[in-house]
Image (tube, rainbow, N blue to C red):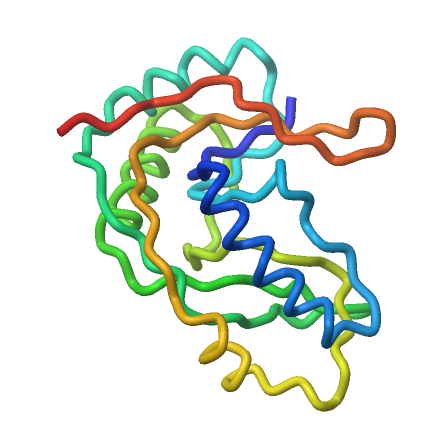
Amino acid sequence: MRLFIGVTFDAKTKENIQDIQIKLKEYAIKGRFTDKANLHLTLIFIGEVYSSSVNMIKKIMNSISFPPFQLQFNDVGSFKRQGGNICWLGVNPCSELSKIHSQLAAGLTHSRIRFDNRPYSPHLTLARSVILKKNFDKVQFSREISGFNVEVKQICLMNSERLSGKLTYTEIYTQNFRL
C-alpha cells in the first residue's frame, strides 16, 4: 500500500480550486492537471507500507486532537522539474497545520514507520509536468485568484494507487477533530 495523510475538501472547496486550475490552464502550453477527486493537501507522505501498519497509523492519527481551524489559500507557485514544473496552490502559514505535521512525524518515528521527512512545505498540487507561456505572471495571477478560506475539520489516511491506469486516492480512515 502507498499511503499518505492529508486534508481533503468538500465539493465547494474543490470547485473553487478547479476554477483556479481552469484559469491556470489558459497559461499552460502543457500539463497534467490534478483530477477534482484527488485534490488534497498532504500532511505527511508515508509511502509503501505493509497493510499490517495501517492500525498503528490510525492510532497515531487518533492521538492528535485539535479543534477545527481555518486554512487560507493565498498564492500560486511551482517546483522546478525537468520536463515541466509542479504548479501548486500555497497556504498562509498555519501553526495548527505545522503542529499536526510534527505530531504525525513524531508518532511515525516512535512507531518505526518510515515516511518522507523532508522539511514540511504545505501546498496543494494543481498540476504536474507544466510548461507555462512566457507571458505568465505569477504575482499577478496570485492576486487574481484572491485567497479563500477553508475550515479543516479532519485528517484522512489515503491510499494512492493506479486503477485502470488512472491515479486514484482512496480514503482508508478519517480522524475528525472535536470542538
